Each structure stands twice: as structure tokens, then as C-alpha cells.
Length: 423
Image (tube, rainbow, N blue to C red; front, side, top):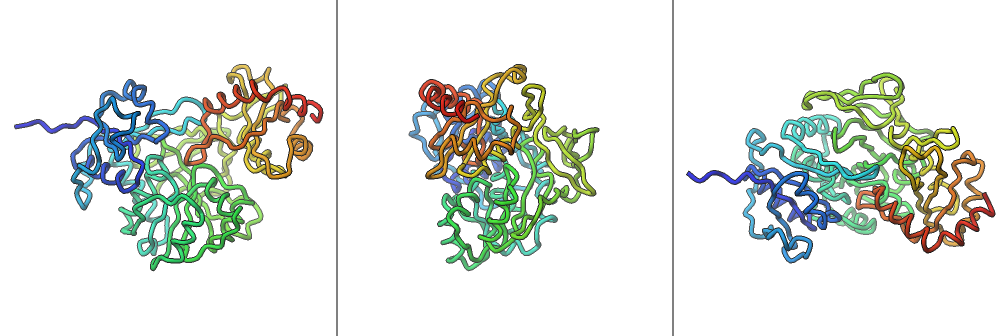
């Protein structure tokens, strides 16, 4: 008897329909899947050193990044129409990469028990009539959020789904106007900002699910007004999956607390440290975020690894990003410390901004002054055409480091001079 091939497969697909074909085929063949973001296709050799040998399934078999791996075209696969029962799924079902926003991306594996358990709690937390909707996603399927909510959740709820990812706010608007079923939109804050900046008014929207980073009150209000429904935010991570939920409305006056999903818990470990527990996990998982418990829920106070100290004063990088991003004249922003964490005490923060038309570095610094302690005013502040965000809006530290070097080499002198004049 021929032994079944259980070698993992790396799924490198541009089209959602081909991703689904490849992953369903792999599950049926009991072969673990490695979900590779398009930005990482050129890093397959490094990935192979971490996870071992794999075959490559792709809808772009002639892509030069994949040449060395003798890729198998997804169109040649014969995937089953239905999923096999979870007891026969491979172990692990999927391997994903974290965003790399605080360092090198990490490899995280997902077993069948976690996928099924998470699906059950999400189905109980979301409205029962979600099954009559069509899921529309702007998030890539190889990211944990898109994978859970655009790949698995329609399967567990029986809802329909679009076979392709939606890339623009106007495409979502057109789908709402043409669909015979209400839409649930799976999306991110970056996409929602684009939607609200266009001031679109969407129709036929049953719900909006947002994750990857918390919405500001301003963006939450604007999104709820554009979509005509509250925004459902999901708090989670690649390591834990979905953990908590909250609703954002057009008339909210303050940030609402997060409520743990039914059947799971976020438990204090003293101070602002916390851990996540769920029956489908092997044990508690320590959270990287600082948690402030309030009543039966909690608020997120930033990550452990984003707390920086300058001249004896501490601040959260996440909070600094939010303050700079909300400053008049700024379309997008990110702080960056050009030194290793151990040396932050001796460093001054820099930052990047995408300016609104008519704004300047000087005007931004003037508007920021007084909102943040002077030691956290960015020196220098670089103006860039766009920030190198991933498809889910994340910024990798290594890519920001490269951007910093580039800006420092080409623009540091005039920008630093302008910044020092006003800081």
C-alpha cells in the first residue's frame, strides 16, 4: 500500500477562490497548510529553514519567487465540494505568520480543536440571522482575521460569501446596491478610514466586523454613520484567535469596554498583565497587551513591548501614534525609535507623517505641541508620501527601520532643520 503524502503545503495564492480551492484540497488530503502572505513569497527559503520542507500550491505558477519550488498550480487540484469532518483534518490544519509589527514575524500553528471551538463561540456571539447574509471581505485570507472570519465563519454559520476579496470602498457600495442579500463586511481600520474619507453612504449592510487594531472614537462614529449599522469590533491575536467583542455606534461619546466572547475568559495576572483561557486551547496564553479591567470587561492600554521611556518619562507607542494621527493636517502617522529597546532611554523619538494637502511639518508640530509631553515630540518628523502598511494595515518594524534610513539619508537635513526651528 502506498503511504499517503502528509508533507505540508505552502499556499501562495493571489485570488481568494484559488486559496479556498488549495486549502480545502489540503485539508481533504490531510496535509497541513502554511498560509503565506504575498509579501513573504520572496522569503520562502527562510520560512523553509523554520518549518521544514513543503510543497507550494499557487495560482501564479510562473511567479519568479516560486520557481525554485516546482509549484503546483491550484487549477490542477480537484477539491471536494464539502469539508471533511474535523476529526480527519490534518495536524496542524494551518500555520500562519504574525504581522512582524514588533520584530520578525513568528510562526503560529492552528489545530482543528481551536478552529472549531473558536467557530462555535463566534456563532453564538453574533446575530442568528447572519446565516442569511453574504460575507464580503477586504482582509486577506492568509491573515488570521481574514482566515477566521472570511474563510471559516461562513462555513460554520452557513452564510454565503464572495469568491473574491473586495479592494475599494466603491466596490463595497456597488455590491450592497446589487446584492439580493444583506452584506456582512469583514474589514480593517485602514479600509474604514478610506471609506469614511470618501463620505460614502452604504446600503444593504447588515453588519461590519473590524479587527487588527482598535478604532478611534472618531473613526468608529464615522464608520457607523456611513454603513448605517453599528460596527462590531473583534479583539484577538494570531496566537489566541478571537478573544473579545464590542459594539461601536455613530453616537458614542467614549470608548466602550471589551466583553470576552461567550465561553472564554481574559483573566488578570496582577497589575495590567492578563492571560486568555479557552477550553479548546492547551492552556492559558499570556497577552502582550496591557489590560485595565473594568466591571465585567476591560480596556486595552497598549502592548508590553510598546511602552517606551524617554528622559525618565514613559509613554505608549500606540497612544503616540493615535495622537499624532489625530493631529490636524495628518492623514496617517507612525512613531519610530531608531535604536534597540535597551537604548530607548537615551533616544529621542522620530516619526513619519502623511500630510493632508496644504499642511506642513511645522504646522503639524505646532498642532501637536501641548497634546504630548515635549520629550515625545518627534525629532525629526519626516514627511512621506505613504506609510508601508501591509494589507491589514500593520507596519513591520524592520520596514520602518529601512524607511528611517532612507529618509535620514535623503531628507534629514532640511526636515531636521525645519523641525528644530519649531520644537
